[in-house]
Length: 122
Image (cartoon, rainbow, N blue to C red; front, side):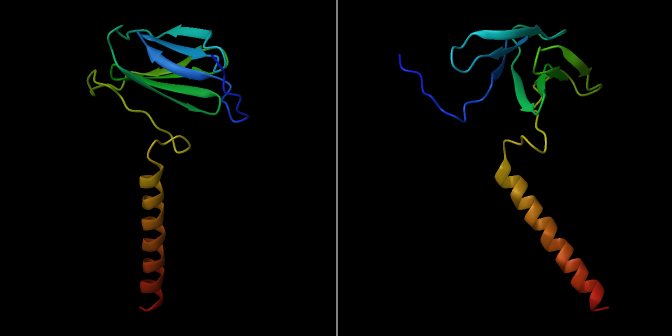
């Protein structure tokens, strides 16, 4: 099998499966580290995003923050009162919906211009 050589290839791929977060080498698929998430069931579905030097995993109604270099858990938010459903995760730098984010920023800018114009005409 030929491997695609790409200068933009990430340093690692991070996935959630079976109650664990795994970091994989993008060239070989080998596991770099694996961390078991406390209270995450093997059958649960989770989401993961990477933002700089942290990975955020949303699973079983909880948010886990892991160090991407070694997979150690930095903190856990139990999201009290929110139930145990799947938690979608995003940060300002990693939002999967960039178009919606750009549209919101444009709307905010328009609103600021309109407010400034209204204030100047009073």
